[in-house]
Length: 83
Image (cartoon, rainbow, N blue to C red):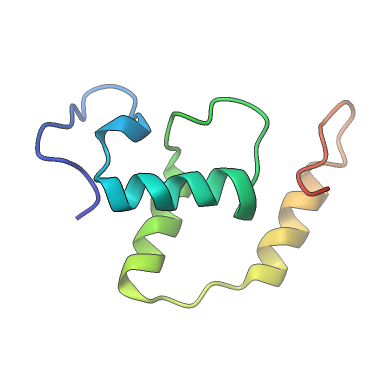
């Protein structure tokens, strides 16, 4: 549902192997909704779960997710995920 037919699933999944709509969705996820500081081209398992939830219309508890991400950023020398 998310991958192109030519995607190589034996190694890392890069955003370039996603369909166009899913690439746009992945960009929004890693830049705005769940920002991260590096490796934006590689789709993580968490990214794929959110794309799947968006595609089938599952509700997402954003308050819990943002609180979890902010709590994770409390460790030393971690960049803040939200400005």
